[in-house]
Structures are given as structure tokens and as C-alpha cells.
Image (cartoon, rainbow, N blue to C red; front, top):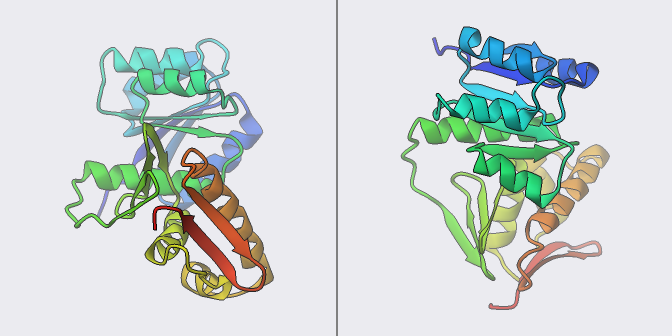
Length: 230
């Protein structure tokens, strides 16, 4: 039987944190929650987590300070920053402190789960052959949901990766909404259609740094990944 991943979760927004904690526990993870940075440091040795989830704005020690203290003695434990601070300098600081991921609030809990699973799969040395698509100035690795454009890297959720894969297989060609909904969600319902709109927005945001690419909506036809190189 596989041992549950131990997660140490530090966030001073208790109401939000307890909801996310329950979601993670429903996915089979063991979660220890604290509401400040000092307690996070105290619990780190006791919990021996495989993953630390850190808000940045916390009393006692902020998330950056907690990460710095952890990294002084531990370079293996995964650290994800979960924060409403979306400024580029904050993101760069998070990765400079050897954080493994940085999610800006609000985000879907499913996105966090997808990123956790991707990191665990990478750590386990998944030997599956890589499936890579290249378009514009961008490379999309479907095997690990990674999108690279120049020096920018974005980790997609599983659903976003499935959608982009369908578009990338047929650049400059319309992919019907019904086909995407059927493959990715399993049904063409109103709720799923709205969810698809949201995921397309996220994908457009992820591709915005590549001027050679765009995802175009075609009325009653679907979506097209436009690549001016093709």
C-alpha cells in the first residue's frame, strides 16, 4: 500500500485553508495545517513533510522566510508558494529560494492537485517517452504538462494540457468544441462548456508571451491554434 504524502500547509486565512485542506485529504494526502510561519518551522521537523505549501503573507515569519530556513538544511522537500502576490519580483524570489512551484490565488484546487502529481511523477523518475509539440517560439511537453516559451515556463493542469494537445495536433485548423468537451470532460453540458471557456482563457494567458501564437474562437466551429510559422 502506497504511503500518503505528508503535506505541511501554512496559511493565515483559516477559512480558506481548511477548505483546501479537506480537498487535499479527500485526494488521499495527509495534511498538517498551521496558521503562521513560526509554527510551520516548529512542525517541519515533526511532520517530515514531502511537500510544504506556503502562503507568503503570514505573521511571525512570512512564507519566503520559512522557505529560506527550510532550504538551509533541506533541499529535497518540495515547496509550493500559494499566494495572492502575483508580481514578477515575488515569483522570481520564490524560485530564487528554490521553491518548486508558485500558484497565485485564486486557483482551482484541481490545478494544485495536478501540479503535485506532476512533481511526484517527476521525482519517481517516470520513464515514459516524452511527447513534445513545437509551435511558434513555444515548446509544449505533454508528458509533464510543461509549456516553455523563451525563458518562461508554465505548468498546465491536466485538462489544459489535453485541450492544448488537441489544438497542437492540428495547428491552424478548427477543433470543434464538442470534440474537446467529449474528450476532456466526457460530456457536452452547459456547465462543462463554461468550464472550457475558463480553461481557454488560462491557455491564452499561458501563450501570451509568444507573438507568433494565438487561440482563436470560431463561432459555432470551435477553436484554432494559429501559428504563423505554419
